[in-house]
Image (tube, rainbow, N blue to C red; front, side, top):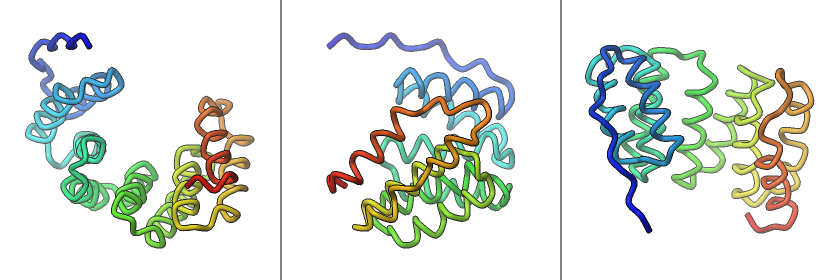
Amino acid sequence: PRALPRTKPANCSSGRACAGEGNQLLNAMRFVDATRVFEKAYGIDSTNVDAVWPYGAMLLAIGRVEEGRAQLLRARELDPLSPIVVGLLGYALELNRRYDEAITTTKLAISMAPKNVLVHQGLVFSFAFNGMPDSALPGPAPACALASPPCRRPRALVCAFALAAAGVV
């Protein structure tokens, strides 16, 4: 496989700007560069939740689960009402096979943002991995129907439902 070219050094001057650049790199699957930029964002402003939670998410994505969870806990201290942060904490618990806690945490995220399809999807997987696929099946259908703009991630939801129904997860 062909190596991806390295990006130019991060020229961002704020935690939020660096976090935005890091998200672009993450979406391009440029994990090394994204990690570097998220670390810069965190270094610039460790009190800006928009710099802290993406760094935690990035650490989860590259398998540094405990470090990622610690950053997400920090982000939750900064913004306890963020459904994104709470949902990601549920995901971190899921990665640690703490499925009951993941379900509870993800339900909290859903109560904070009932139309957020991604937190509903996290609940589907938490139930399925916990051996309760029947509880997972109704999962995000209401959120997908209510989402505004309309659900953009139907493939991920169908996948979650199909895996749960087939007993694969």
